[in-house]
Length: 292
Image (cartoon, rainbow, N blue to C red):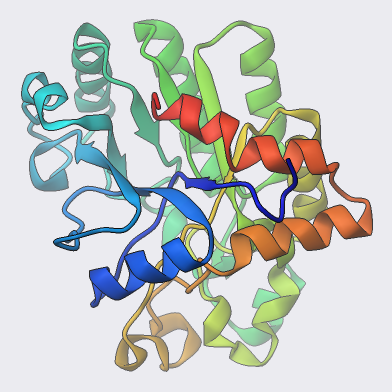
């Protein structure tokens, strides 16, 4: 078994305006499974297996709990609020308690609603470009809250799309304490850092934002050590009219389906990752996370 021929299991992919074409492209690239966020349009005849996440609150309004009791019959593999904000921490606590009662895994994407409004990492590059910054604390403050609520409720939780070295340290400590958590990182954050936004390059306008080279290295090391369980494509096609705009106005997202295998292979060839860890991160680990 090698990274070049393993069937890929992706924990996050959006299918865009042409779901059928995206699913067919995924099949050609060697994907076996794509995990879709809530309300994602599905192709009529997908050539790859589609795993679905349900909304944890009604229409992701952050306030009214969704009817999770119906989800298992519909084949939902977990629930998420995505980056949509919670109305308050009480709602989130009640949602996690409800999910625990339904034995439903929760996928959490830690991002403080206010600090997360920045469009670039809080560093010299963003400051020089005059962009509103998003400090690492936008992620770690929310992550610390999420981990505390997981400890309070005992819900099985998956922490999605980590971007910072400080988040890695929080996850490592939480796992050592026995919290029932797993986590992932997008391939974009293993390959790119904040330097890619030079020249206001909107192709690298992402959420979470690209962080420092030090953060990128910490994420790679965390994958190798198994602190980060899985790597996903986080494929997010954006219409060109919404992408080709001044950097701060460009919608966050990138087409990265083609990068998951090739990007990991690049890291393996460089000696940054072992091939076995790369294989596990896109096959065994994500399959276990979504219960396949």
